[in-house]
Length: 368
Ligand SMILES: Nc1ncnc2c1ncn2[C@@H]1O[C@H](COP(=O)(O)OP(=O)(O)O)[C@@H](O)[C@H]1O
Ligand SMILES: [Mg+2]
Image (cartoon, rainbow, N blue to C red; front, top):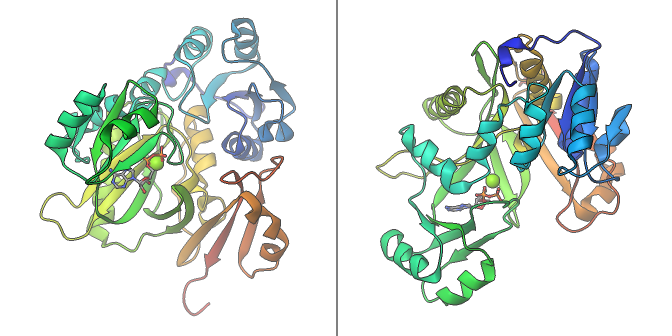
């Protein structure tokens, strides 16, 4: 069913979203502004996205009957997270178009498949190796060197399922700690900065990229994003063209994020791809208040079969600060910061590391 060219929604039509977190919530809010309805599918009864839609399905992704009923209620289906089980995607795809295309999930759910795909496109990544045992880990270390980063092939996020291996570490212990049989070892990249490109691609193949964003992590969780990244225009152009090449090669419809490392002053490639997220992304939240069209609206437009916006940034620099865990308790302080816009996701308890909200700040152009 996933022929994007068949999809042409009209105001009043309904988009089905798999996943009920803050990304699904912000997608539904963007859709509402365009006169489109959303129905959220999520197994978690406390899903923050349920609060902003009239119709929700609270069921497991393995519940075929619930999936079928959900598909029957909606005109097109999308997702806010890449770990949609492939069986669920297949059930849905037999009934309604699923965008982005479900084959994209297979590539992006697996770090090894993703790196192989990027490499085949002639785009640089950190040196990497498939690791399935402590013996293959030792071989990979000989080839790649240390320090290196060992990552589970699947289900990693916010630095979970990763370990840095340094000279002198107990390799067997690191391997056991990851508790997996399928991992990837990556050379540690001594990056100067981390950037991401949020790109939208329409069903007719147009690509629109937002300004390249610079990202700072704290405890492996995104802390601050800034747009535009403080990099030369030629490098920004290279980063955008990499994202466009990936989107075209995947025949992608919707918004995707490509995380990249910028190397300091090496002689090789200046930009390496770290990972691809087949969805809207935390590093694109600045676009909600900092651009004429947000990443959420671009995604909705793309999967609706509508023309993409040509995003124009508001202000000289736009900053996005995540409110993680207890930081959400500062929301009143943020409410009175000049130029700040506060977003609270409506989640329950502020556990450590949990993304509870974010703030965007637009710095007006000089002289204003
Ligand atoms: N090969 C690497 N070299 C240096 N730093 C890395 C490497 N891989 C990951 N990191 C750091 O860890 C962060 C999280 O890793 P990433 O692969 O993006 O996983 P996820 O975002 O899914 O947790 C990156 O943003 C980066 O800061
Ligand atoms: Mg990442």
